[in-house]
Image (tube, rainbow, N blue to C red; front, side, top):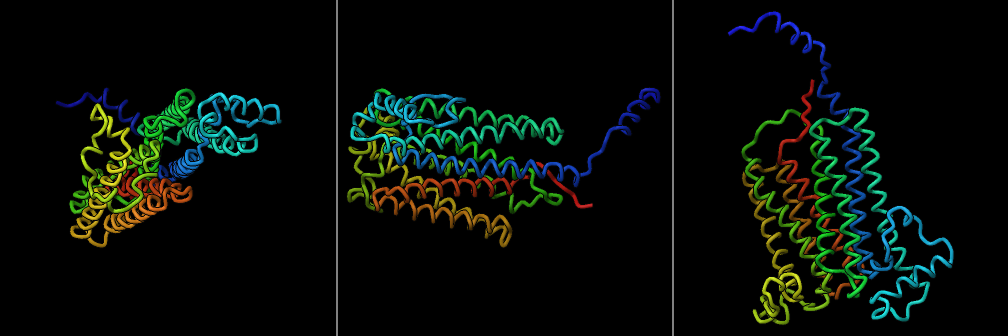
Length: 374
């Protein structure tokens, strides 16, 4: 059935009048957005490192109040410092762990927590302000807008979780809850994953052709990324329970490759052993580390078997190297009984492995922005 000419003409006129955006121009418009997202990813990485240092120096409970605006500045005179110190003296950590601490010692731990919170505020502004600018100047695609709003929401959620984590250690404990610590770190990791995913989706590439040899790698790459995230969460439980200070041997734990069930399941209910039993928590962290390494090796072998000398194969190899390096750092941290430098390096390199895993997986998929050369 033909369309009446009177109805067809207006539609043709609207189509002719609609502005067309060439792929090259769209890529140029989104180039600054991609650079901004990579800057945000770098700041999130720094945030995780500073957060690790804050935890390892037992500084996280030094600021006992949440002041999103007024807390931007540290105390500016001795009276203000003394008031902050007096508030710290009211919590169990001071009474049970630092009763001999003086004002100078308090300032040292205070500045770690203050720097951690300040960096969180900086990242929040770094996401919000450019987002508004890119939005109002029309640089964002309709599909990208809700994804970036989601990134901003993740950052806000991370700040709220961080405060509840601090609050968990202000009354009945001398440190923060391992549950909130794990949630805090995993949320930060997810924010990093989402930021890299979005940034890589804006990468300029030529027209994409389907390659079955590469597409077959996606399921294992996705599983590897998920397993790395699980391992990050398990590492947070190890840190929260100080489980790295026991069983400082490898590959055996107190003479056993697998600890006795009586040790692994000593608590009731049984599920609590996964999150509160230091033996089980450390054993799980070791076991999943082996699983990550085995899966990374299998994935790299599969890549070289079906897509040799491709970018996917080289990235899979780089991922194996990173996982091996992280395993060496983790074992060294355990054998040395968790010195500050080793523990901090272990946490930082975990984010490197995670970043490589998400970058690899993203490049195995179709980018959000395809640029066909003229």
